[in-house]
Length: 178
Image 1 (cartoon, helix red, strand yellow):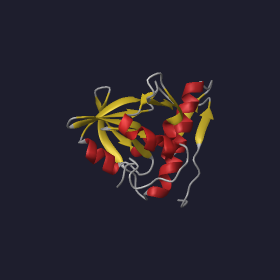
Image 2 (cartoon, helix red, strand yellow; image 1 turned 45 degrees about the horizontal axis):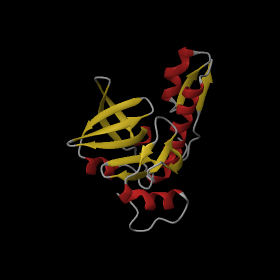
Image 3 (cartoon, rainbow, N blue to C red; image 1 turned 90 degrees about the horizontal axis):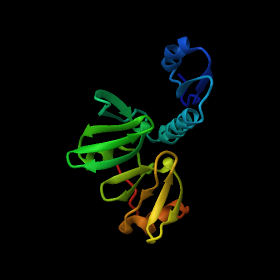
């Protein structure tokens, strides 16, 4: 295959070709008529793959349970992670999944610097953040491509805001590390 294959999202009226499309490693396969949320999710997925591609030749995966079924999630599918003791809740475009691992284990597997630690035991994918503001209590809120805004802990707020504003990350920035 190509060293850097193009990221392709198929938009078609022909569902019978979906299996072939995924065999060709399409980012997504969307049937017409195209729904805005479905297209937005596919674009986020493409952006995730593009950002993660130069970081590792192999794919980072997690075995997780989603809707009562075991599934394999790629790091590029993950929008956020939250500690739950010996489990981690993984937020994806398709919904929530749970993996049996410690938060530290998940944080170490996720490609850095694509994820920001916004509070103790909570990560967000950088590309999922669309903007930020302060709430009435002065707390930093991150606006997300999907879902409600995420509150940043006071301990992480100034460093996260500097990072999002484009300043160079320093050693004290809570960006996940490998």
